Image 1 (cartoon, helix red, strand yellow):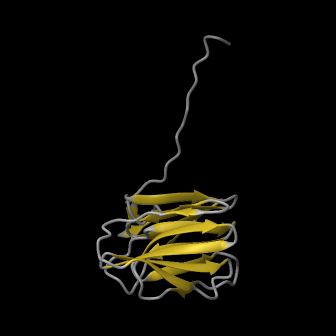
Image 2 (cartoon, helix red, strand yellow):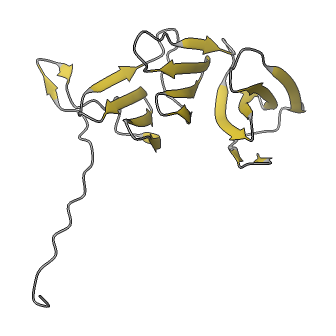
Image 3 (tube, helix red, strand yellow):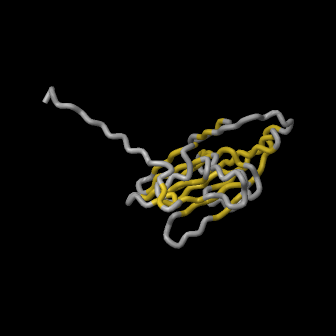
Amino acid sequence: NVDAEILEIIQVPLYNVAQDGINVSGLASNSIAAIEQTAEWDWYATASGLSLQDSSGEWWIWESDESEDSSVRDLLVLGSQRSIAAHSLGVREIDVSPGAKDIDHLEGLDIVALASSGASIFALEMDDGDVVLHQSDSTLSQWTTSTILSDGTAMSLDMAGDDDEIHI
């Protein structure tokens, strides 16, 4: 029908909905750095941690306990139930498979960006203006390190990758 009206509904998660002081909305912050989706999960990198929502609508939140800065700077989904999150004290590997445990990598390093290219995973560190690139395979069991810039002049960084290269 030509005269029919179209109604479009945009679904966005609510922030700061609480009951008895407990966050029931799921989002850790109203500042979102990245959103990634898989068939079963929505992953939100926020200024206050990582928020996860499963396909049934249930929420989980991970925040770095050891740092005053609990922001998740970047997020890289590695599979339908597995991702890594960059934060001020390293990289957190999150696996939401039943019985799986989260694992910390590059502990104590200020990781600002993540990317993948082919079978390699990259983490970009900024240390007082110096830039360091960390590389691993998809198992994340061993990391190699290369200094890219060592004169202290870097002010901000980002990184992207595709099948055969990364861009910093």
